[in-house]
Length: 356
Figure 1 (cartoon, rainbow, N blue to C red):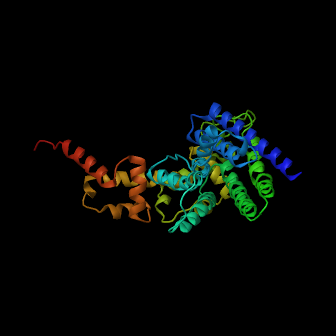
Figure 2 (cartoon, rainbow, N blue to C red; figure 1 turned 90 degrees about the vertical axis):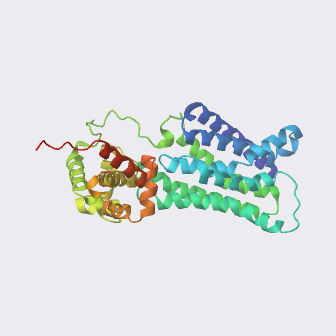
Figure 3 (cartoon, one colour; figure 1 turned 60 degrees about the horizontal axis):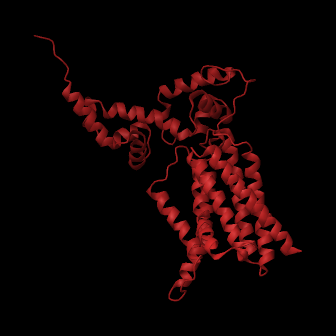
């Protein structure tokens, strides 16, 4: 009875994962998150094909490629959630290293290898790696929730933590069972299938903006030039006025602090910044003001002798390293390089003095 139920759940998981992967590729492959989701779903389907009840019946020429494809599931899951939770996410050198590290373990288990001479340590690292990936995603989901201005994504962060916690617990529980069928039943029934079912409902009739949590167009909501509710126009004007007056220069400024200054609930302020000014993250909104101030100071010949550190602090940044990183990400150049170019341009266009 258990083996029959396990085979049924395994087959349902493979079919659902494959379908979701194909739908994601068809509808949202233009987005990085969509491509990662397609790869993740197909990798999970391949993994279940080789490790589930069907695995023994697969021909050897098909088993190895499917097993290799399934070995990337943890790395793809890690990248997919980062792409969904972070705006402007790109796969850079750090992400490439993480992808390799989270893929080595599953791929190593595809083949027999000598476990002598310190291999026990490697085996432990291989077993721990998936939980490190899940823990990092959960940390990102929880720690960056306060600055997330997209209401749907902010709520989804809680579900990310809940679903991944349940998946990790189910994995630990299944590995503690001696009966392979019972272990597969626990893994499939408690984590894999419920997780895919939730994603299936969420992505029904996948729309290109779904993975970015873009709101659907609602005809019953009054439209305004700024996109904000007409009742919040005064709040939007007050926010812009406060920021223009220099509120952004306050060290450690948070969304809650701005809401307190404006005497408004945090959720209303979050909606105003998102819908009225088009920002999806409070840090990006705040850094826009800080960078504008810093760029003006760096380009001012009268302030050419001031240190970059002083200008960074004056603009509201708490550390030079943070200032340099944010500046380089936005401008594509370092603060020092930006200053040198602007001062050189000023020197090439000197102010004409009146004839005496």
